[in-house]
Amino acid sequence: MRLILFAALAFLAACNQKPANSTTNLPSDWSLENLKGKVKQVKSQTFIVDSVTGNTGKLDQKTEEDYNDKGFVTSYIESDGKDSMVTKQELSHNDDGTFKGQTTTVNGKPKSSLQLEYDKNGKVTMARTYDSTSKQDGYFTDIVLNKFGQPTSAKNYHMDKTPKMSFENNYDGLYYVGGNSKDSVGKTTYSSKIALDDKKNPARKEEMTTDKGVTKNTVTTFTYDGWDKQGNWTQQTVMNDKGKKIKIIKRIIEYMP
Image (cartoon, rainbow, N blue to C red; front, side, top):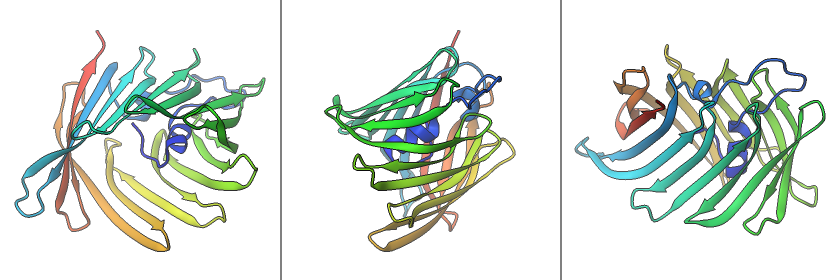
């Protein structure tokens, strides 16, 4: 469903929020995810490619994303290849498509939740995060949105008001093309830059991650090997910086009547 990092950040950065005094309708998640037609569900399977033979190997990950008839995501399920770790995120929206919040469970047990607050002009002012016991454990402020209602930046705090992290997102029109996140002292811990192809699908991604003082840079490229009648891709090949296949992603897309 989305391209960003942490659970709360992923949904704040992923789900539409209405800019203050907006007179235009929000773009649907169909549009933001570059899906054509009235998509009901997208199921994907990610397979590891054998580094020696180049053959498609074991199933590594599965996802299932459901949409309502307005084109907004209502749930997202992610599991490993053996279904031993199943994460489910359920999202709620207002009638105009503005994002209200989400809950996350792991193997059926509560993990976290996120709720947004708006002022009388429809501007999102805060996003509160909660732990598995529904106790608030943090919040986002300084949330800036672009004209499509997508967040371009926000700051995250602990309950004692000390900084936790911050992020910035970049877009090419509707489409996410990278960004960065910083830790509590303002040091960049993650950054990405995504180049899109002529169909607005990701073609190349550069990433930098820093963990415990160790920085890692990676370059990934993508090709598309299958398409359905609506023009949505059904198979994606993921390659490393040497052009070697590392993953194959297959999608099954179900449409509304």
